[in-house]
Image 1: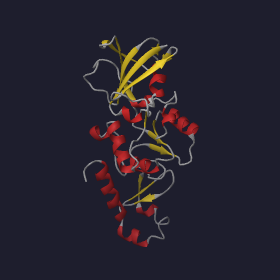
Image 2: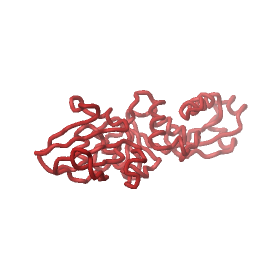
Image 3: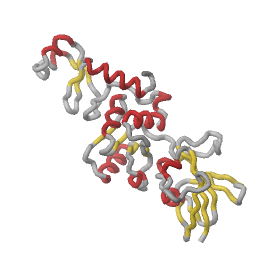
Image 4: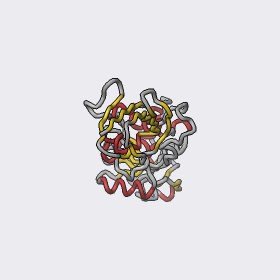
Length: 260
């Protein structure tokens, strides 16, 4: 039997299980056998995709700080500091971060439909299947190297999940802002191209001549009269044009990007 003391920062305290939090964000555990640090952290309720840096030290005063990965074995009394994403740049600045290189492509679970739609609106490649079960979500994630978005923490803890995020908010607009912040998309604009994707099936829209949509929009005579620019989804064949609804979507984009 040996003791382990963990300190969580960078917003990770929100995941800690009740009764396991004392003296601020310090959690103390007693282990009976050698255990991977990933399992020690997740037993506290913190999914590993939310962890960017793990620093272990020796002694009571934190000597010899060093970064370890999720496979590192805890087998003796240990103190560790677990940092959320992104870990502070000044903490072991040369140590590799555990969540670097996350791809800006997503797969969202069935409870995050509005979040998925908002991400598509911003031009972000986001797969969403309302009825997808856990194995299906993991299949999509692995096949396309996607970030898993889910509020199901046990799902995020699955060993094959490399990149993932658990939205904290219950509200879809704030969830969207969280994702943009978490993956640095708002700062560098990577992958952001509003109105370029189908909101229903995620495919990239293609410009199409008005003459090619006359039959499809035969029941929309006013649309055909007042609009000349159209785009069509090559996946589901839905047709888009800059109607009055576009103004509402533009306002939503402005709010999501902090411009409205």
